[in-house]
Length: 145
Image 1 (cartoon, helix red, strand yellow):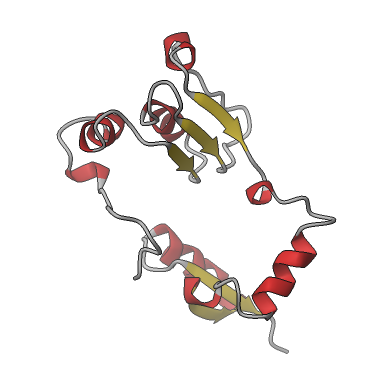
Image 2: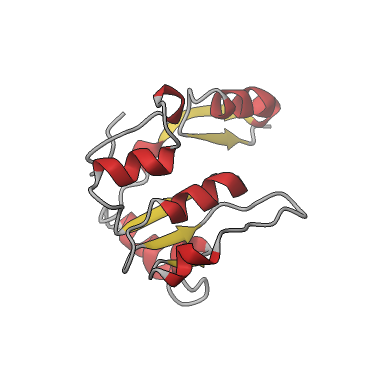
């Protein structure tokens, strides 16, 4: 799979240190922007801690399970990092999503490359298994008669 502009890909399970420390070390102090899209509150905290002191920004996109809370030491924020969340990538659904659709239809926004599987709705459980196992980026479910 093409990594769409990313310069590095790190598997946390192959590291001897916490992933945030690996990222801080390899970037000489942390990243300008980190994005969390898993909904895992531990990953949310790690994403903040991977952001650079002074200006690093961590954006939470993942939706945590009901009742889950995120926490961090105040020092992580006092040192200049910022932590914020976003829904729909920050797009305003009423005014900006239609423009995004138009850009897709004009070929300016690539989405099709992320669809790696297509299955009938009756195979929804298999689609989720593919996603869970990391064998699929996105699966389109079709509603056949």
